[in-house]
Length: 85
Image 1: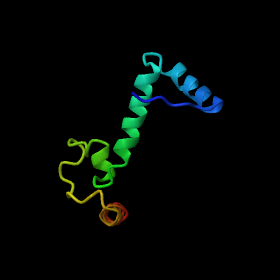
Image 2 (image 1 turned 180 degrees about the vertical axis):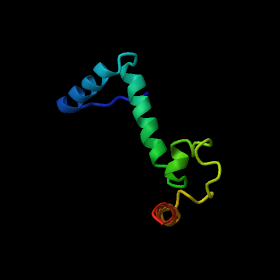
Image 3 (image 1 turned 30 degrees about the vertical axis):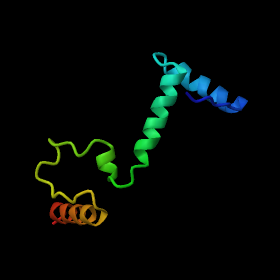
């Protein structure tokens, strides 16, 4: 069990978030926010992995390293080159 004291501004922000999340109580909201933040801190996984991976139906023929910036830039350059030639 953890007790946290919030300043009035943060308390109001929490109330505002809860007003938009009508099926959630304070505890559930705080747990979800902590879980989301914790998942973003897993630095050993790529952004795509943290978001659930590549959609399989869209990238079936894509190279496995397409999430790398250099590979993406080259793929876009090749696409544009073929499109405009």
